[in-house]
Image (cartoon, rainbow, N blue to C red; front, side, top):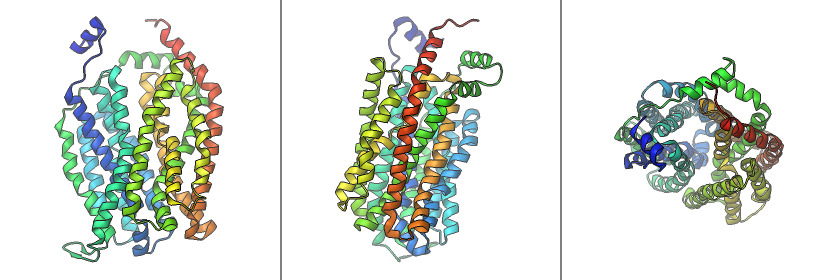
Length: 457
């Protein structure tokens, strides 16, 4: 037994967390924020890229969605395997260098095909960070402090969105003053070329931050894994868990996929909507979207406290029941936001809608933590992430582009396309969430009973 574990066992006091552990969180948080900047900056450059390369909305949607998302999801699986077997800091380092280089390469693109390939490489590089980060944090923090660490890390997603829109607007405004300048190796460059290069270059330095903390030793739970494997008769704990809870897992997959599609679609297309409908420039909507994202990030803490309170009072299905309440209460904002002709009312509604689209992964991970044995939690989260990425980042933005180009055949009708996707996702997400309630509470009670039962040797 380690020294920290001995202290906890004898005194019952929580193990103090060293400053070096929080420095790890800070580094991973910073890299996650930076990844969102490289990921989202393209959504602020739709107008100039579309005009310069003579692209359709559908082609733009492929750049915003599938080019990144499909390869992010696919390479997440082998990179997750690499995280389990090789030094995680090196996996992250090469991932950061790749996505930074790909973002810089995007600035040199002179065709749709070149930009598409660069976006594919951004997705592959970013796929390394999440599995490595969760693995590092799980081995660095004591179990009773791990939730705090992962929650702080998860907030980087919305902070990253805010940073992307805030700094992106400033970068675009500055790059516009240099539009048409003849540069060495680059030639005469448009503002969007310069923006992509500017946001990509810092990545080469930021990648080195990963070596400012040590690689923590891996902690295994062989007893749990072996017990789970034995209980499932050698067929695998993951297959056994899904078989036992297939209705709940399936309904959660459907419900949260709808919300993932809604969230990723709005993130990708709202900047374009503000530009086309309200004629706002990136310098105008960038700071406004930053504020909306920060407010939405704050909702994570509030929602989490409410759910913990309800669960503590005995509501075993509190996580999905509260989320379904949230969807129902805020659904009108998802419809009204595309009917108002006031930009500030639109932004207010968008902020409210994000209260449902921002936290969905936290609810997923919380339910998995309640139900699944330790040996399969990471695999389950990886499966959910794979589906959410393919459908949310991949299909969602592409659906909007396809509706605008092939159904409405009018760029000015982008709001109609967004409304169809948003309203459909709210209805589908709510229905699946309510159906899942009949399965969640019994599953939680079974898991609690199994935890209390004596384990036969």
